[in-house]
Length: 560
Picture (cartoon, rainbow, N blue to C red):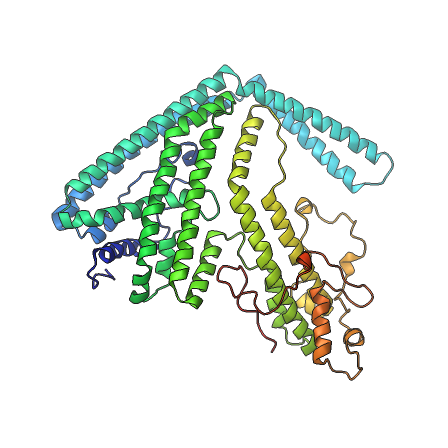
């Protein structure tokens, strides 16, 4: 083990943890992906074993088992695996029968009525698509209004039929039976885990018993971390540190923060799992009876999940502070990308700017403006990403709860409006920043350069994606580069002294023009997309100085 040369017991225990992490990280697929399907979610992970036969390698390498111990532990594992598999398969068979009873007979009048309503809805959608293509022709608006009314009537009929099916004695009995299978399987799983661990500990020596707690914590984290549903909840801080290949002296400095994370996050994960296991039956009961008695369970589950996420964030901050400044910033930035990949990622607009800087035929003066715009983009993205992160931490668990309540409402025939999402609003604000920056890049490049970068097409709004061209875009499809690739137009606006060169003062005017969302000659600026937040100056050259800023380095590439 990598730290055995140090004498302190804490370092020895940390060595065991890192050794375990390294072994797991080297194995393709890891352990986290098992039991992650819909059945596992319904059963709160009850059909996924706590231990597997391949764990023998971890026990052997970490605990240094002798030959006799290895044989005993292998037999204990095989007995556990066989017993758990048998119980799990029996439970799953019973659950599948319950699901089949909930669906009912294919020939039942209720099922046939639902099928007819779905087919009728499909026909109306096809007609509505046709009327949109013929928008403006005589009678089309009246036809579309009539189809919308008919569609609403069918939706109401489907809601009524769904409510009747949900409240039927057969459906209620099947739900109750399913809940019993789930709770029995969870109870049995916990009992089998306790018995296995008791048998395992009984064969260990005193020295091996010292190494068992960190190994047990590692196995718990490996099993429960991937089950997190919130952003940042699944970050494996220890594995992330291991991947950085810090030297032993640096790792020694990090041991207090790592050990603290090891103990606190494992306890938090176990609390999160225990709460779900203990309350899964009552949660399913609240869904069956369509009451709000499960809300308190889900809110507490969300709080426990947020606790795990906060422990991860705090650990990253502590580790970053313990590292030298540059290494700490890099680690914090990497941790954010891993923990919040939907937020802190390289965007397509960033890639477009980087691609533009690599073009061979860009005039030097244009390239200066591209670099300056890229630097401003990083600053704007840093601000936008922080807003998304703040909204995510504030609202993500509540939105998850709202989704579950909408599902429960739909299943019982009710209707629920989707509330405006603060997270989506923050993401849309970032998209506006990106599109404005992309538009400014188009204004600087020639048509050929734009084509070389893939066209730099504007992203379709979410609601229009997949609908094809409806012929309502006017002449926007023929838009060329902002100055139509015309250097003369560019120089005419910014070469004030007419000497054919861009001086420092003229270059500053170009920068200021685009900082303020400026357009090509004759169009003026458009201060949109957050480019002038509160009238402040965005600055330049420092967009990437923070380790967790979400920016891409220290001010972007320099012109060639």
